[in-house]
Structures are given as structure tokens and as C-alpha cells.
Image 1 (cartoon, rainbow, N blue to C red):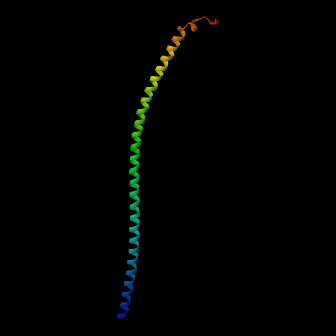
Image 2 (image 1 turned 90 degrees about the horizontal axis):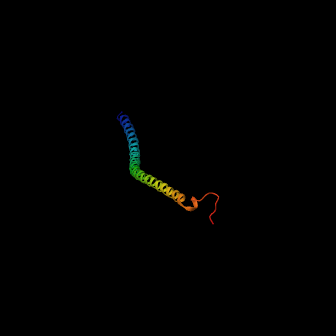
Image 3 (image 1 turned 120 degrees about the vertical axis):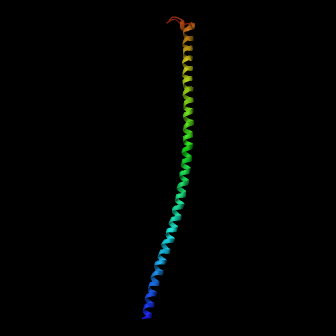
Length: 109
């Protein structure tokens, strides 16, 4: 009878060892998955930091471009004014010259 009890204890111990091995295997697999996820999270965090920096640079660039566009608008307005004045001056000059002031149909030789 003692041998029968010993065999049952051996069976229980074998079953316990099998469960322990299975748990150890799952524990190791979970540890590896955890390390992989941790690495991926760090990569994502680094990518997000780079993107945030890029967005900040883009915002600065957009601000500079807006300022440049404002300067260009002012320059274009000044050029339009200058062209208008030049046209007026040319029109005044044409109307004050003898060639343009002569009668139609007559040619100057």
C-alpha cells in the first residue's frame, strides 16, 4: 500500500513539474513579448518626438513665409504705384511732344 501511495505522489509531483515547466515557458514567452512591445513603444515615442519637432519647424517656416508674403504684397503695391506713375509720366510726355501734338494725317519729314 505504501508503494501505491508513493506512486500516486510521484504522479502528482510529475504533474506539478509539468505545470511548472509550462508556466515557466509561458513566463519566458510573455517576457520576450513584453521586451518587444517595450522596444516598439520606445520607437513610437522617438518617432512622435521627431514629428513634434518637424511640426514646430513647419510652424516657424509658415510664420516666416507669411511675413515674406506680407513684404512681397507691400513691394507689389509699391511697384504698381511706380508703374502707374511711369505710365502717367509717359502719357504726359507724349501729349507734350511736337510729334504727338501734330495734326492727324500730316507726316513729319
